[in-house]
Length: 509
Image 1 (cartoon, rainbow, N blue to C red):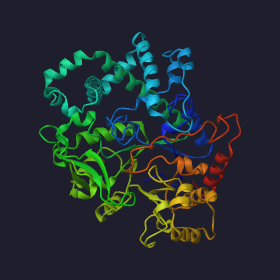
Image 2: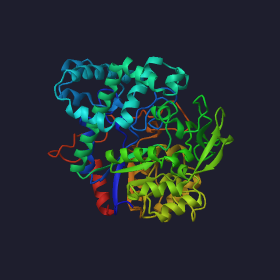
Image 3: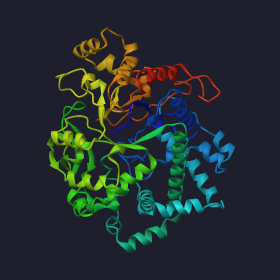
Image 4: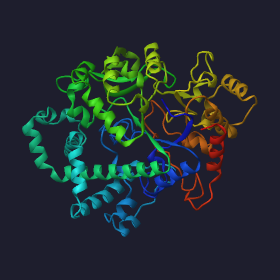
């Protein structure tokens, strides 16, 4: 169950301003935490921080090469400089990046050079006991991840199922030879993970001092091209050649008339049950060390999942397959509090999922953009139907911005219902704050607002278009766009932080 009456903002780390081309855990992340505190917000929700594949759907935080590792592009060069791991002249030799978009290929090229330089200096440093302790504590996933990255780099563009059979099948002698062959790359990857988690932990600690809690995000699936599938092939439905027999997706829905074909391998829940769900318990435990709460994407996938035969061109060719959800969650809740989980229960949700969420007092989701059409009496997103034990959003990372939705997607009928709720007509430049006010006034215990909606940005600031591979995950805040100040304690609050603080007080959040 979520805390009584609170609110926060949704902003992914990559979207923070930074002169290095992508948001990171550096000074601007700390400034944003201070902005949240100034605006009387208590939560900062982010998207998954795991490393994207840089191949198919290359930059999606929901398509990653590891369910445990961190995206090293989020490591702050400024913090590395403060540690003495980078030189001033190395930071000054910085190319010009677009301010409002992440130029991923350019960022990867530049930051790789910086991180390599930092790694070389770290090798020669004397204080490595903390690093060694990190490697020991995380060996269960870190050793295989670092080796997977080394092999992935060595074999180039080919997938791991096409590696030599002994490596594909993880024969002990082949793994030992590989570890002995790539010590430099393996060491570099472990160093990058150490720095990633050290910087994230410091940001979490600082946020906690300000009264800010972090909400993380766990994709239900992992990419086939990942260390997880290579290291744990027995818990996925694969062929003898270690290729997917089925892939994941969803049937036709709000976002796509033919459904969404995600391409991830599906879990073998019988095999998972035989291990008492070890991999899932380790994954959720790992995330709950990093975040105060976690949102689990596509929550209904624990009850039944959409299984599509590998090679299918459209998701509509799939079928639902049931999971042993009662046994799984009974095992899970013996170790973790249900209150620490937000269940993404959007889309077509069956009665068993709804009943389970209510029975265990799990926190569900409500999205205002979905709330003004259909049978209003049965529409869970219609403001009058919200429940206390839920998080209400104006929109999620998969939605258009509020202004973009109102201008380009909302129908005349939806607008009529919205105007009736507001008791007046409004224009596009008013929609963002009117939806924010509705969210804050909701009975839902927690309200989360995308930063784009605080700024009233149009569809060009959208984070993701589901079902589309290009032009996603790129949006960034311009320096000074959210606030003209750095939000230090000795400076006056910005207009947006004042407005949020006032609304928070009025709505009892």
